[in-house]
Image (cartoon, rainbow, N blue to C red; front, side):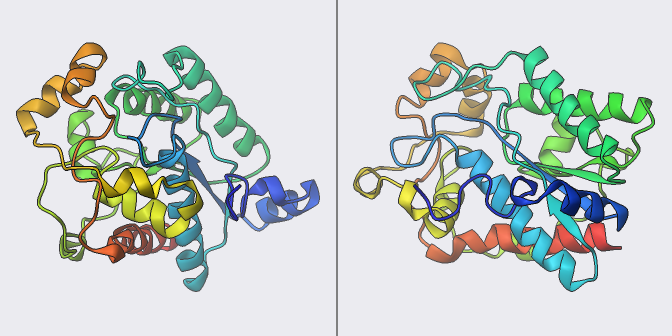
Length: 273
């Protein structure tokens, strides 16, 4: 067991009265979202959910310093694995199931009186993000204008991939800070179970890391063109990433986890305005 699990610091630890009081004070909700998915031989299958939760914890801390109260919802971790769904350790959740569950979670938070629900999703799968986009757009059509998207990995690339501009009402607007590009990295092209995710999990959930497996892992030598093929999933993903990781698993900077902490500071400022 880790010292902090997926319920630690969330509404799951609050009484119903405490939830009602937070809603009456117009606290915002941070909703961590992820999946259960193979993350190489070194990281836990809950990596995306763990990082999303940690982003919410850090955002909560920095928002509080700016006078903005937030609560963290129990993580939504039954997202869609379109790329690595066939790898051992991944859960294959149907789109309609994932969408229905996320809709019900958001509806429940709104029904409890929370004016703002901010989705913080650390999972780059296109099918997963298409689903979130659809759920949030439909929420707005139902009048839930406070249900918005705060974080997606590689935010601006994701916004573009989804055919969005970032100015749509479902997005919380914030700009990329050039300081996020100043961290020391390997230079290896990576998108999954790579140095960023490894650094974050080693920092916050070291009990879940297989350090023996990590020590011997070599970086992949994949390109942007390979990424387009990898995203097809199935046999293409298995052929290109047989070990379930894409990039350099071992960070050259052990403080690379601060990338997420700095991101949380930006997000906290965005929701505290």
